[in-house]
Image 1 (spheres, protein in one colour):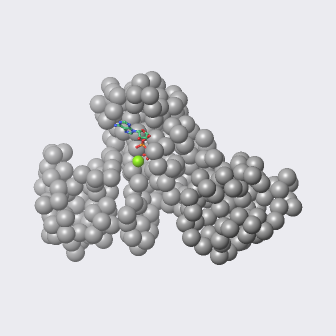
Image 2 (cartoon, protein in one colour):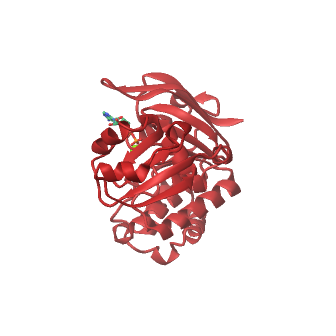
Image 3 (spheres, protein in one colour):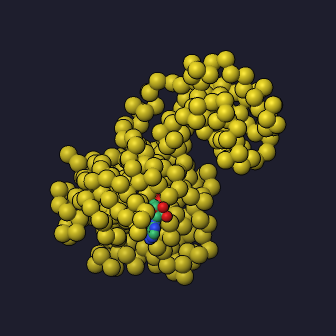
Length: 304
Ligand code: ADP
Ligand code: MG
């Protein structure tokens, strides 16, 4: 049975529709990845689930109860700012919350010890938070969010600005704790690799609309498409590249980035001389290679 049900959520900021009829569900213990480019509506969705913003239309239900009236909802969220007290120590930050919850000192300390050990932060117990690396601060923020075993953990871009090692540790911890304690995790990212590694289910949003919602394994099993990648010798303006390519290739078959062009191979363009085309238009490249579709391409296909 679903833990969270989002029903036809619409949110406007003036003329801008940040969320357009967004609906999906999250099951108990499920890890759901919310993938989309910057400005696609990910944070706005999280704010709606935590009841931080008013919504124009639609409903959010937790355990079948509308969030606005659901007093017993047990949700934790970690947003970009982490919400830690930078001048307090690691221990003090966690104690602040155990006290707030009215947990006795003994029980509180047991919880704190457990999470500091799980998150390998014991040696930093008495460090002032602002002296910790960004990765450690993020780990501490997640540990704090998990102190009271929420039913749902919301993470907004948890790996942003974090080194690879911390990222890998956080991924392992989230997986372990979600499995052990049946905690549903809903996390956003604009990086497909993060979502691909972690999520049981992937929801792709673009321009405020859900364009894909499926189990990760189904998405990865989708028919493979051959793509040609062109690695450019320098950064070009995306608009400039698009204009040139559009003279030769139907825009639905290519994506441009400052340093890369991806062309989906299709029958129409089977005879296309890509190196010649680039050469004639003075677009300098360092490498052209074929690649089977992975989630990256799937993502690029869907957000076109
Ligand atoms: P994401 O998290 O996917 O990057 P957001 O949910 O933050 O995207 O934003 C979605 C859209 O809503 C963007 O176009 C953004 O500029 C706009 N937006 C978000 N918050 C506000 C706000 N408080 N006022 C006006 N526009 C906003
Ligand atoms: Mg965001």
